[in-house]
Length: 210
Image (cartoon, rainbow, N blue to C red; front, top):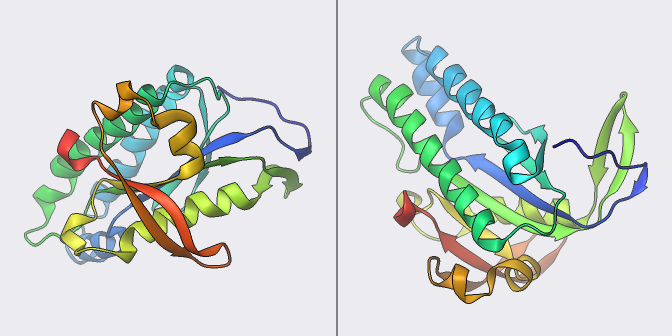
């Protein structure tokens, strides 16, 4: 659902940064087998799924990052359980597509081939760059850095379908019994460059829901 926002400061936006683990390694391995079309199909299929669910979950696909996407949820009335179920459904879709398109092409897969997430909320500054709307702001930086920080701790095999969520998002949407009955969140501290060396956040493991 495309939401028109005037140039300048926005209202709060819930930002979800998504990354596909080991995408560079998968591309290299598929390229050696002349099977890169499989990765193209994975990206196209994931994009079509995200695009077809935009109005259902009230988000915009802001940007493709090369190995993932950044989503903007403008409807802050979204239910926390629905947000988590969206992440699970996206993870399930990715897992199914990767299994059918990529896994069948390669004998040795990287240990981590799932998705990772970083989530924050806040106001952004919107401006025009090259005739397109672009955004900058702390919340966007935090979401992207949290996504990257998933890989700071733990064995590679345990990174897939994990997310780091800012406490602002956790306390605003997720700390309620309906959500906590289905999902477990762990209090964590991560070093986010140029943000905070001891940034408090919550870690969630979605792999048990796939």
